[in-house]
Length: 157
Length: 132
Image 1 (tube, helix red, strand yellow):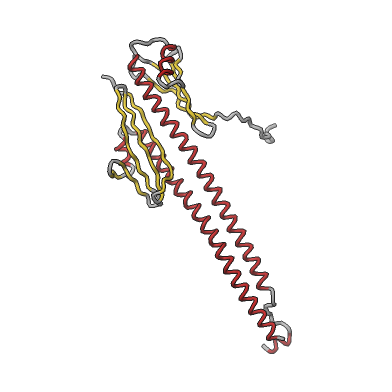
Image 2: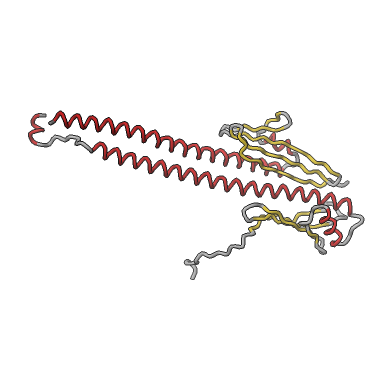
C-alpha cells in the first residue's frame, strides 16, 4: 500500500465524482420512467379507441336487428293491405322507421351510424307475401369519411 | 488536510444517497403508474376480446343460453357470469321480445374490473318466426 502511494498508482474517489454519477443515473432513470409512462398512456389510448370502435359497431348491429324486428312486424301486419313501395315507405315513416327505404324492385335498405365516421349499411330483399319476408343481402361497415388521400405516391412511377 | 477531505467526501456521499433515495421514490412511482396503466389496458382488451367472442358465438348458435354455457359462463340469479383469471368478469343477461312476426333476443354483456364497469356490449339477434 505504501509502495502504491509512492508510485502514484492508487485510485481515490475525488470530491464531486459521486455527485456527477448520481446526476447521470437519476437523469437516465427519470428519462426511462417518463418514456415508459408515455408508452403506457399511448397504449391505453389505443386500447380506448379500439374499444370505442368495436362497441360502436356492435351497438349499430344491435340497432339494425331492432330495426329489422320492427320492420318485419309491420310488414307481417300489413302484407295483405299494402302493395306499393310508396305506401310501405309512408307506413315505415309513420312508425319511426324513416331511415328504411323500400324500392320498387322489391329491395329495402337503411344505414346506421357506427361511430368514428363509419356507418353500417343494411340491404335486403323485401317480400311481404313470402316467408321469410326479409332476406339480408348486405350487412357492411363502410367509411363515411370524406377526407381524400393526400399522401404522396413516391413509390409509384 | 487529508482528514478534512475525507469529511467532505463523507458528507457528499450522505447527501448523494439521500437525494438518490428521494429521486428513486419518485421514479418508482412513475414506473408503478405506467405498469398499472398497461395492466388496466391489457385487462380491458382481454375483456373486450372475450365479449366479442361471446357475441359471435351467440350469433352462430340458435339458443343464447346454450352458447353462453358452452363458453364457460355460469348461471347465477337470472344472468350468466364468467370470471376470468386475468382480472375481469363478464355478466350476460338474456332478454327475449317475442312478437307474432318473430323473436328479438338481446344478450347484454357487461364487463367489470374490480366491480368497476368497463363497457357494455349488446349482442342482438332477430329471428323471423317460421311459418308452417
